[in-house]
Length: 487
Ligand code: MSP
Image: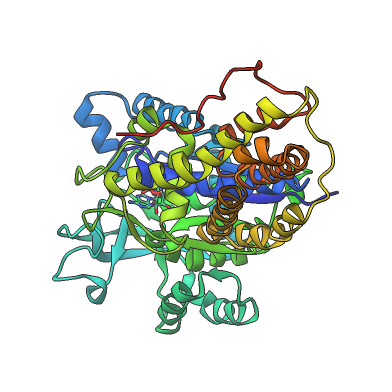
């Protein structure tokens, strides 16, 4: 059995259509998966939608549509967007899938039996938008720290997950696995939260209809987070009553990619649930930052968002995949502005990469034979190829902006070499040396195309067509620009 490299994204809520914030986590997962596949590693990417809970039920009621029908519709919008963004996922899970629902119910019963889930009464402050309870201390000015909306005081019969029991085990795990919570600057806060003392978690509701019923007590539905977190294993064939034969080919996951606001669910609650089930923990939970617009979190509910489709329609798919991972370090917050987008598009893509490519291809088309060169042995190429390890390492440690920076330093270096050696003058002054020089440059472009492929698959493809064994355009024709300049 060969373990696959298992990458997950969070499951997206279906209360509204996706925006760039959602696309971000999924594009990151896709870039990593594509990179690994290029290295002949078997990567498996699971994504999907989180469809239960009072928020979604409320939205569906407002729209006068049965909840499941609403979920079908919005869930399909996510899938269409992933298509538009060139995301090659391997499995799309919905929390309304019956296999998932059955597995969640079976997990709940198993933990009732083991004593990790017990019945009690809950009194607390609940934020409907987060679908989460807060303590008094966690509120900001008496309001939800994320949505800045009032919270509701709730009291109800509830099942509890014995989270407190796992406090020491979690702390020990964090200590022994320093890479588990990443980036490290986000881990500290989470570890301190656990150290400050964990209380048991309410994991069922009697007031929420749109949820998975507790099998042995169907007046209760299962708390959405308890339901949704389990997707990472149910989607790979885990059900405590019958674990699929290939489950261990996927589990433990190599990385759960999440946004910083859901780090705690993934770094505290989820590992405790896995401990209770006697399963291994994922190798890493990596929390990225937020895209903001004018400083505020991009979010559909505040109307402060940019649709990825609109950007793709204007600038093409690869430009958005480039910009979001070049502009901001993966882990930090960043402001999304169309001015910055256009600036990078024109300077990095149209100018640096686009011009380098067109210049070399047009020169090669004019001056090389029908068959393009086959020998990569040259100093310029060797110097460039030496960067491959560094780029690979940046991608594998999710430092996407570092990888792109290294690639663009190489592109600038090549542009400088071309500007210094002026192949267009060489054609007249030193025609013997020209084919050799162009040969070197073609090989360098091949390398660049392979480096950018996980980020910009269509551009890499377009480049490769012209860098193949044969010339792809007729004599006298000019190659189409990769990135037409925007006024
Ligand atoms: N349904 C839960 C996750 C359950 S996982 C078992 C959820 N859904 S969400 O739709 O609200 O968010 C999903 C992901 O989108 C999160 O990783 C979140 O950080 C990301 N983003 C949503 N808005 C974002 C930005 N403005 N910026 C960056 N990413 C953000 O949470």
